[in-house]
Image 1 (cartoon, helix red, strand yellow):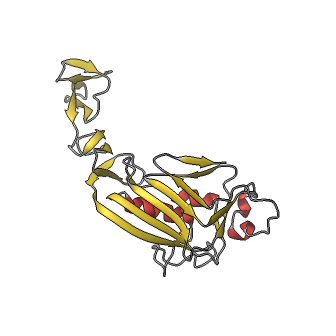
Image 2 (image 1 turned 180 degrees about the vertical axis):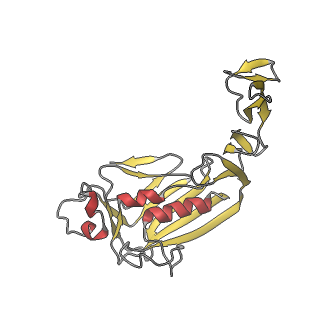
Image 3 (image 1 turned 30 degrees about the vertical axis):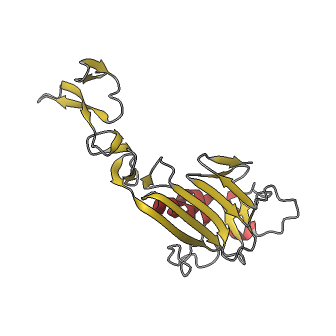
Length: 237
């Protein structure tokens, strides 16, 4: 079997196209009885079955379960504005983290993930990530594990602003070697943040905040006072 019958054209196709999926019907002996193209749920742009969406139509976002690549399309709400707070990784590691000023995230990547997961549910969202300027911050390899999404959307509706709580510049030690990469949706603004990646090649066994706090005498590889990127993904070396 290498195709499905498209009843709209009476032709055999290998791909049913957007809004439709290929369905196989077996007989009692497990042999193929019928192959045909069927319609996805109206909220789906692509699907693997009627209720299993792979991407969504405009105005919806895809919610998936962990370990799966398909899920349910849910309708977006109106507008949202909010703030998430970020503290140093060495502080209150075991404490509850919800991004409030009393229970801030201890990782920029965790804050980014939660900002996107929150904003995806809305037609338009602007979310500030506010770092405490009197603390030392870092982005290390283990933080990448956090960056797995349960909500997916390609409509680019989330604008992220990364700043400090009091607008005083602070330093972030970037420990992911020579690549500097953030997901950019509707926009990304970075203010009062100095990214230091000069000491980014290290033994993974030493990848903690104390290693990142060494006194670095070399000129900073990347000093960013403000970056404004819109509708594309930007990479800094």
